[in-house]
Length: 392
Image (cartoon, rainbow, N blue to C red; front, side):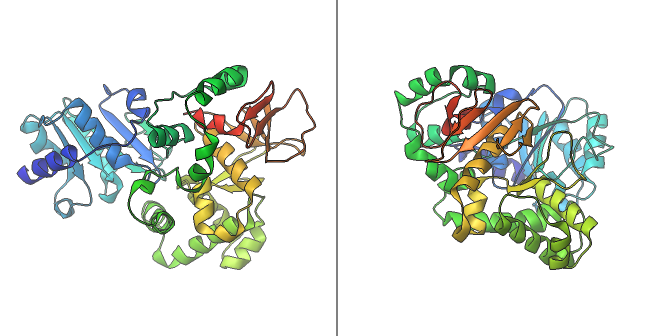
């Protein structure tokens, strides 16, 4: 146990989160079982350690452990939790919980057996804590940690402390909001860099970002999808090929029969693989209003623009990048459906939006909101695209 305390003390001491994530204040830390999901690379480990540092400092009542530790190949979470709380432990932080076999049953046992122990764990976005987990669905509070918003990226690069705005605030007061931001910084100077490499915090590391992201994407498929969905290793190449084909095709409706032939599997399996890729936050599925999985989506997009530049950089169309940014930033708190021919997307079932690239001619329809690229300021129903990056 002492070795775990020493590791915890070292990690907490050397943790310095570049940006304090708003999720820290959104979580009800009084709950006894908290799950923090998120795609690989968005900073879940740092988030846990930052929580420990903020709330507990060097206090031994809080302990961070990682299921990668070989100790847990021989010992159960329940036994460890028993010993920890016997020594006065109150908060156990478990990183990568899905690496431990039978983790959900063990967390349930801990919840029932140790009423004075709080457990906070991180896991992959592929985990369906509420929908598929009979042991935990009635006791776990689940949250999602996303990659950096454009606002968080801007704060990091400029040292500013801009706040997030609701969609309603942006639509009603975008001129006033943009004016306040522009008095301190020019967001368009940073916007393209964010599109290329700003979503994942590891752009701060002194390594090649694209190579790092490709490695992370491979881990998402190899670990998050294969391990959690218990898919045999021999099917790995098919899922990877499918992801590549979807990326190369660009944002459009998938030809499922063609894809099934290309990766030599059934149409039903292709649709399941597409769902797994969406769960892993590698792609987004956009549907017409009123439709959802298992129907075929009307558009498949990469989950964020950083992925586009890494997976197939020779064919990145600006309009696709802009629409990918828009969908990704709206996705957190809003429902995004495919629009008709005259609009790009329908948000929350009733708000039509059109994403406009530089130089695009706009036939102004007062019922439509235009998200305009390269505009520092907007006017009336013309809103600068970058400002939607302040939604979280």
